[in-house]
Image (cartoon, rainbow, N blue to C red; front, side, top):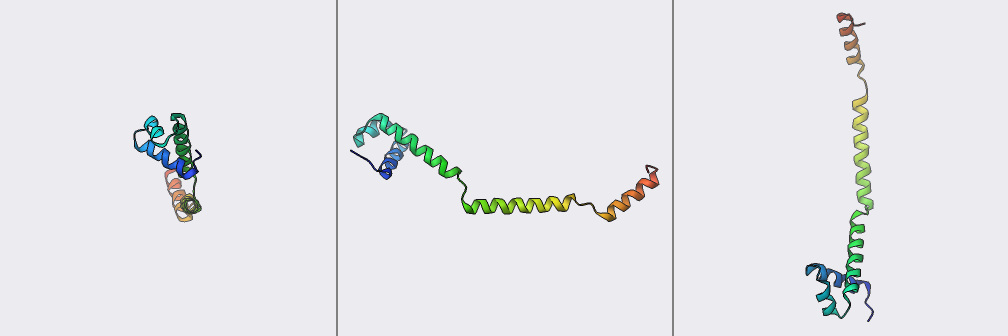
Length: 97
């Protein structure tokens, strides 16, 4: 008997929900242990890929966050001319210049 992808997924989920009991799952659905195990591996792989694939919305959020961080770094890395002048004055007083 041929099973479509949604049926395979359902069988794989059933096996996972029942403590990875491939033998009992295979018996219930009339398929082999090996077939259940293969579908479970396939299901786990597709679930992992789905979770790790970033969506457009998450990519936009990440870009916005990086832009904000870059902006903050630009502000922090700029030299303040007033503070620079004060520093030079203190160095002169201390004889470091």
